[in-house]
Length: 238
Image (tube, rainbow, N blue to C red; front, side, top):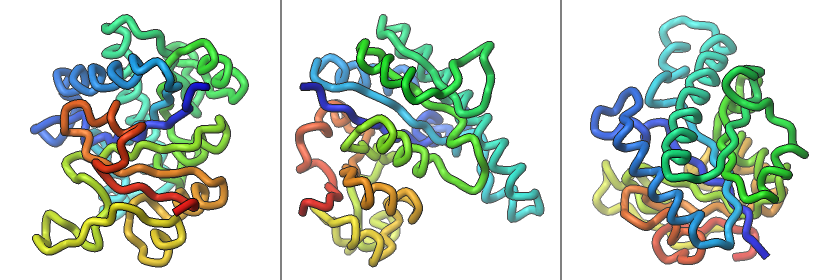
């Protein structure tokens, strides 16, 4: 039986060293890594991507923009990223479908749960853009919600240069302690910022495991499905 997973990518991961915009060489590298996961043959893949490389809604709100407007702009930015990933995957002759919560039928299918399930059954890779289609929710919540809707029991949280969950920021504190395993409740109680609290709660209530790992190590995206030693596993079953 195939394992159904949701791969959560940050928008920043698509920017490469420039830290902003879409670096097509970096996107192609990520597509190669996703192909390696697909080629395992026993995984059904959905992808949720953020927008931080194009739009930071939090910064816009701090400068005076209405939060709902800032969030809608972020949703549009995730669609740009989703289309970039789709084209890089299709360059590798992988069959994909881009689905969006916002209706843009000229460029992507509207998200319909039963249609998404049909695509997965046919071996297609799904890329979700547009977040949840409503403001005040993050793409972390989208990953948790799509996992629950589609029956995925594992979210692969691909971090950009961080190899797991720490008790403090390892980039700021050289003595930060890395966790190998955590329960969902520990993540919530310690407020470890793996994902936002709404997303973390959804995962806890729907028994969805989260695996946090560094996507910048070659081969890690494929490795993350079976080798939990390379990051931090969060599960109700620990």
